[in-house]
Image (cartoon, rainbow, N blue to C red; front, side, top):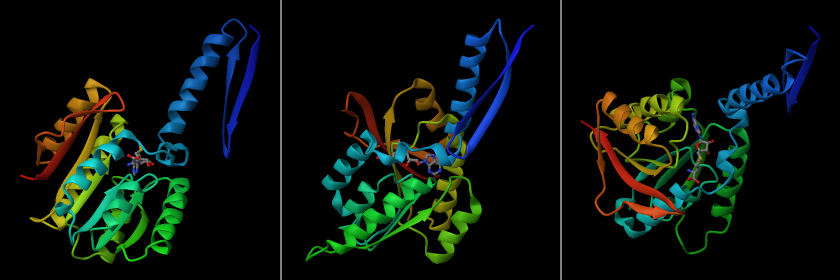
Length: 236
Ligand SMILES: C[S@@+](CC[C@H](N)C(=O)[O-])C[C@H]1O[C@@H](n2cnc3c(N)ncnc32)[C@H](O)[C@@H]1O
């Protein structure tokens, strides 16, 4: 049977496979979906953070209406994207650490943090510190905790639950942060529902990590045609 080798390259990644002439279309499609799923699992190709997501709108709205929660606090945000939530927090908090795993997103975060500081006038603006943090990476988290030995009052996350494989790692990181600053620390998650399986997984993983997860009354709402809710997650 006639065989053909196809190759695929995207930026500095490349892959190839051999297909038979009788099945090129099907195998080609399988190949491309395999590559796409491989790429989406690596931080290099996760460019989701270059947009402002509905979860950020939900979280910023909640925090703006309840700014007392932020007053004088130290905050770490997970999966910050462009940093819009952190920038809002910087108006009220004494310290804001913005984190993400993607290098391109971190570049944008750094630029936005610099812009925020340079454009501050009479309005106070806490130092915004962008840091690399991949969920589940204890070395990166320990480095952040070494630089912030007292830990954080609040952990924030907006629209960060969209890939099932990363949810256990997300909660590993959240648990480590909550334990480090126990009992004062809580995790505020702006959750946007896109799939029932994820709705269940998030609650399941919180409980499996020994955490208490409560929906904040009155926060369930439609945001950009999707259902969103604010969860408060604490140590049990
Ligand atoms: C959907 S975006 C949300 C960005 C921002 N919070 C918002 O609501 O606009 C998800 C963010 O989480 C980051 N992220 C995804 N998986 C991650 C992981 N395993 N570790 C750290 N950050 C991650 C992405 O790079 C991206 O910035």
